[in-house]
Length: 315
Image 1: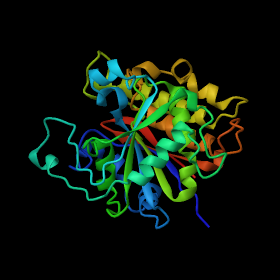
Image 2 (image 1 turned 90 degrees about the vertical axis):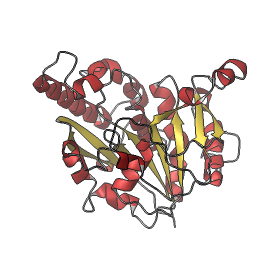
Image 3 (image 1 turned 30 degrees about the horizontal axis):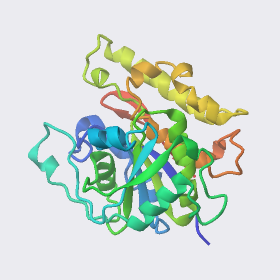
C-alpha cells in the first residue's frame, strides 16, 4: 500500500546564502534542520521521486522568440517539464564568493516521470485512473523541456541544505509565464495523483519577495517592512485555512484580499509555487474544494534578512 507523501511550500532563501550559512538566514536554516518535518520529509524512505516547482523556472524565460512567434509555445499557459537524465547545476545568481559556484548534486532526472507529468497536465488519457486527471486542463498545457538546463538554485539550494538523498530522481516543472493564480492551482491539481505514488512535491519560492525592501530601499523603514510582511503572512495563513463554498475562487483573489500583497510581491513568481502546492491539496479530494482541512496544514515561520515569512507543509 502506497503512503501519501506531503506537499511542501518551501522558502529557498536568497541565492546561495543558506549554503554559505549566512547569519541573515540562521532562522530559516533552523527550520530545515534534522529535527524538523521538512528535513524528515526529504529523507522519508517512502519518497521515490521529487518534483520541484521553482520560482526561477518560468516558461516564458526559457523559450526563444522564434518559438514564441512561430509555434505557440509562448502561450501564457505553457508549462515546461524538464526531462534531462543527468542535470547539472544552474548557478543563476551573481556576485557571490567563488565557492558558491562549485556545489555539486548527483540526483538524476526521470524522463518517465516527466512524461507522466505531461500526460496528467494535458489529460491525454495516459493517466492510470480515469479520475487522475486535471479538471482544469483547458487552463494549461505541457511539453517536455529537452534542453540541458540543469537545476536552478530554487532546487539545488534546499536539496543541499537538507542533505537530501542523491539517488532520488528529481524532475522540475516550470511556472506559466503570466503568473496566473488559477493556472497554477490547476497545475497542482494535475500533479495531485503523484502524491499517492511516492512523489514528494515541493513548491520552491518565498512568502515575501520585495528585493528593494530586503536591501533597505523603497523609502519604507525596516520596522514598517517587518510589520507589512507579518500582516501579509498572517493573512495568507488565514486565507488558506478559511472555509468557503468556493475555495479556489477565494485563493485566486489573494492580491485584492490580502494586506500589503503588492508590496510583499511586486511580481508574483515567488508565491506561485504555493498555489501549485495548494492545488495538490484541493486536487487530492473528491472534487469538493470547500475546505483545506485545518489538520492537514502546518505553517513553519522563520525570519529571513530581518523579515518574517513562512513555509507550509500539507499532509
